[in-house]
Image (cartoon, rainbow, N blue to C red):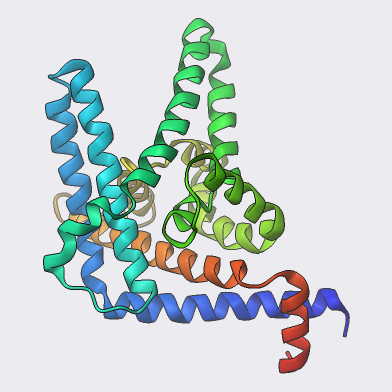
Amino acid sequence: MTDSTLLVRATLALYADALRQSTYALGRHVWIVGLVPAYTLGLGVVTGLGQQLGFLGGFLVFLAVAACASSFLAVISEAIANQRFRIENLGQTFGRFFSRVVTVFFVFWIIQLLLAMIVSENPNLLWLLIAVNAGIFLLFNPVPELIYQGTTDGMALLNDAVQFMRDNLVEWLVPLAILLAPFFLIDPRLGFVAMARIDVTNGLEVVIGVVHEWIPLGEPAGTLVATTIASFLIVWAMLFRGYLFRALARSGRRQRIFDARVRGL
């Protein structure tokens, strides 16, 4: 059996393990699903208040987004580590990865600011904004997992993300392509726009829109059902990504081929 065949079989085994582990973790920690709409609603309120405070309001919104992202990643980290989490400890999670999140957000904010300046001068370059954001989405895709599973900060963390993608490009992008397939099936352009637009503040809204396209329901029941489904999908996807990242980060392709040969895959 060739090494390529063994690598494919070993990778499929990783996907199966991550699928099983993430589904089990979601069942054990199903309450995490409620955090997605709760944080989204909270950030909506903060954003509304921040718009009335000018620059200071924008800064407060930035900090609120970073705190919620830190909390969500901390909870996902606990679930992946199979640790028992007490809801009364939720407040501590807002600061656990806060500094890492703020640093990463600041780097991306600078990039977005420069792109916005370019597009404002020449609206015809809107395609450049979408292309660059889609590229950032792909190149730095494992940043969330590195925030709570890695050991570095700042630019070193972003460099680790690029290195991880270089070493595991195909293995990481295949599940990502499957997750993005509903967007591309609705409209190929929507897929690229989704990659350019999805972030912490609008992730739930974007996924709800896709759910509505596939499961058209009336209001307000439709919104409730779509929000529930979208929240489940987001949490499950983050758990799956976390388990897959851990497996890929702990083994190189040569090791996976060797393990597959030993296991008789």
